[in-house]
Length: 196
Ligand code: SAH
Image (cartoon, rainbow, N blue to C red; front, side, top):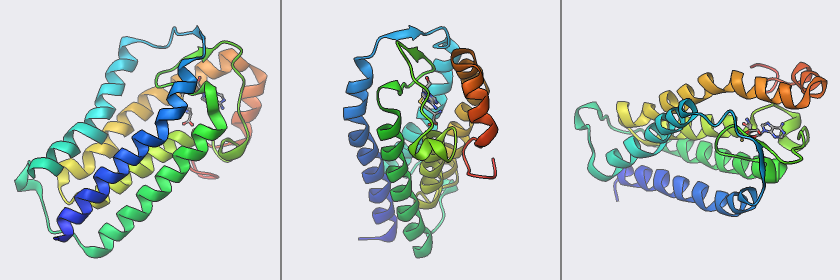
């Protein structure tokens, strides 16, 4: 089997693992009553679509068909090995964030009934560890898919969601948790411990 085929398979397995890993948490979170869904707007849906396009649709089309062929290049073995390692790190972090956040997790921005602020586990290191995990996934995609469009679409797609959402999410959390969230913000960074 070619290195290209192997790295495409690694990407597919990574995405499937992420999906399976999320299933039980999704079921748990769905049982929670939502208290504040004001932030679940058309804008949020558009951002989610852009992210899905970049992390899912565009790379899937490339993996299946090789399109757009003109933007492909020969993969280096070290690049594929690094891609697998980064995807594994992303999956580990997804698992830790879901375990810590439990029922308070949601796809869009919302506050649940009796929502509690989580500041332990990986949430003690950064405020948005799940978004860190998505960036790691996007980085793994760039390493595993040797195509300029399909490789970089994840970083662009998720990056768009992140930068247009994170400020609003923090505003929503400050409204819900007040001084507690201010204090949490004062002692943590967003996605990279100690840096950003
Ligand atoms: N931004 C976080 C969570 C993503 S899930 C991360 O990257 O890890 C999005 C939902 O998580 C939001 O709707 C919000 O209600 C909830 N949330 C975000 N940070 C939280 C925290 N520290 N404690 C509890 N819930 C949180």
